[in-house]
Image (spheres, rainbow, N blue to C red):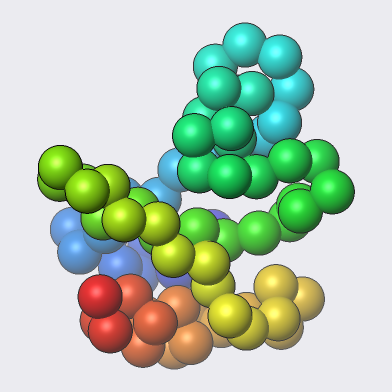
Amino acid sequence: MKAAEELKGQILFVTSGTEEGIQQRLAEFIGVDAAATPTIRLLSPGEEMKKFVFPGSIDSVSVNALSKWISEY
């Protein structure tokens, strides 16, 4: 993913599915099911573990759009 390369050191990117095992547990934790994929989510670590959903279109997402969204948090 181009965004992961360009934003390396600023944010950690992880890809996952919704299949059984660790992927299913991660999906449940962030509030994603198979019907909600593909999606981009942002987790803010800490006690509250805030979760944010990328508001733009996944089909036309750009590095610039992701970078701007990430910088808001």
